[in-house]
Length: 206
Image 1 (cartoon, rainbow, N blue to C red):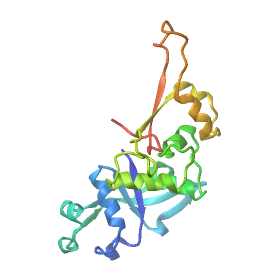
Image 2 (image 1 turned 180 degrees about the horizontal axis):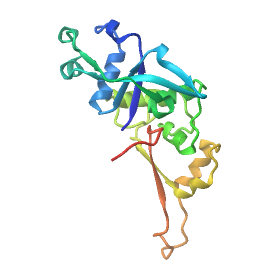
Image 3 (image 1 turned 30 degrees about the horizontal axis):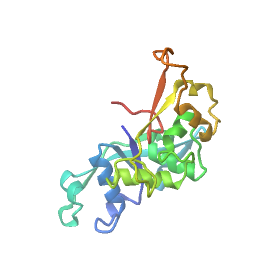
Image 4 (image 1 turned 60 degrees about the vertical axis):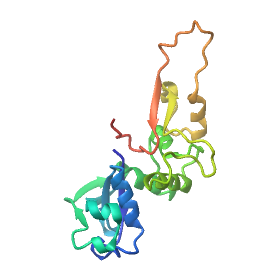
């Protein structure tokens, strides 16, 4: 399940009428993502790893559907118990940190997953594409103006594991196909690795 964390001002002081972050939270909740809440002071550095004191966040069902401030009342959100999480375990926050050059995903497959629009670069366009999917504006991560829908998975020749984690995303492209010599070739021993785009920490489960 995709994890998404929102770094916010104190949620009790949020303007229910004006804060656009609530629309993102509602959209993520409707898509059954795991939503977490944290504030700036909740960011920690523990043995060289950036962690955060997060709380699971859930909007009240009626408010989540309508985002109507008149229906908010006092119980429009619920926070769970505080838990320490490495930011590398949170898909979308980790992508933003990479874009800001704060932290680079270690594994090559993680960077393949972060490149959701498949332009061989992890940048702000990937964040924009993911936000559009979360908000229900698109069902895929296709680049703006693309007439064709994009796949939400990438199938790569399992031999990609031979590449070092430092390999570039350009090098990955050659592993999206496999040449065979004639129809008598051994197709049964061709293995593929399926990468779910956006699942940077690799914890997706069917």
